[in-house]
Image (tube, rainbow, N blue to C red):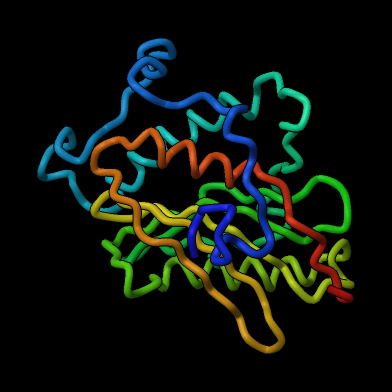
Length: 223
């Protein structure tokens, strides 16, 4: 999958936010807002386990997106997503594994109103990854989110729960995964891995565009 909206390989169920609505997290941005990114080389060698390096991405990412989440939105840039109260929908053991290889979910967002079963989530893994494989700690949370939401009264008529997962892992990399049901098959579409051992402002902004973007269309029983 590619994050180029004009490509045939773009996400099927999600659209990106207009990039002009977002700040670019460059050096000027960091200076203005007192931000600092922990690069791979800045983390002590004895602490460079995949989880610590993934958390370094997540810390910068969550602070960056919160600036838009809590800011004044321009016309057309409204955020249609809201957090899901995890304890009310999921069991902790389904979304986290604390023994090796550890994984977990940082947030889950659903569409606030309308006939949309779409979800977005952020996942971390205590493993290194490559472009040839999807991690178990990516697939299990995604599948469990699908099952949990199909059981909710709000989505009782839905046959598809499209999920867009923002996945952070070692050595200090990230990718986006779109997953959805197609008949009796679960389709899993990962992007390439993005190397964030050094901060890449363009990647963070591109990810944010897809994080805040709206659903492409409803995904109900008749879709």
